[in-house]
Image (tube, one colour):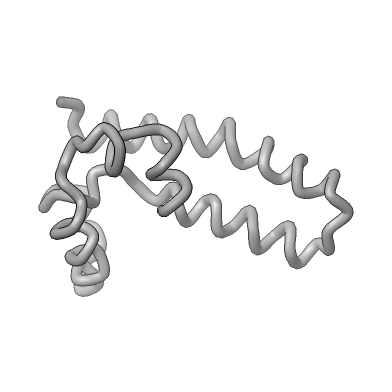
Length: 94
């Protein structure tokens, strides 16, 4: 299983690819700059990090706000191919 550094690298590369695509797609929809900026920021936030479904280095980075991820950790089984480590569903519900 990849460690925290590998997960971080995957997240950064994914952001580097998906964020410009999302921004340009939203730009082509004739939306206001505020909506485009907000939606792009939400995408970046949604891609905060994988493996928030276990007590890990990534989870511990949240410090006193670790409790935000506890319900997710309890509800989503780690390495679930459909819920936590799939491609489509985790992006839709992140």
